[in-house]
Image (tube, rainbow, N blue to C red; front, side, top):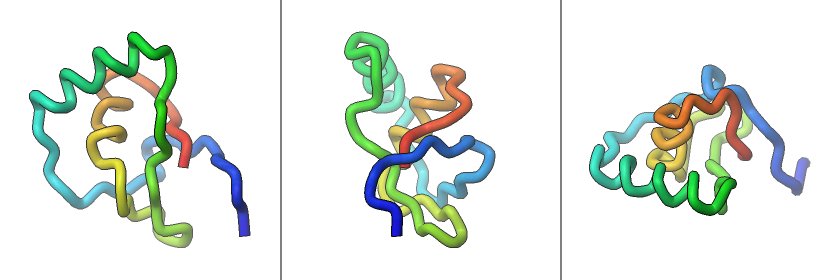
Length: 70
């Protein structure tokens, strides 16, 4: 079992919930301001199904990131 965060390629993650475009836009500005993601994306370890962090994942796509911490 891994306890610390690891970086995972966005293409390996499988979101299943809709996101609010206005919230994604606002969050993207905050991520740029802070210079980093403040929280990890929570995924099912086996299938990489996103359990929590759909907006963080959408922000990563918007900012052109290739990986996110999970």
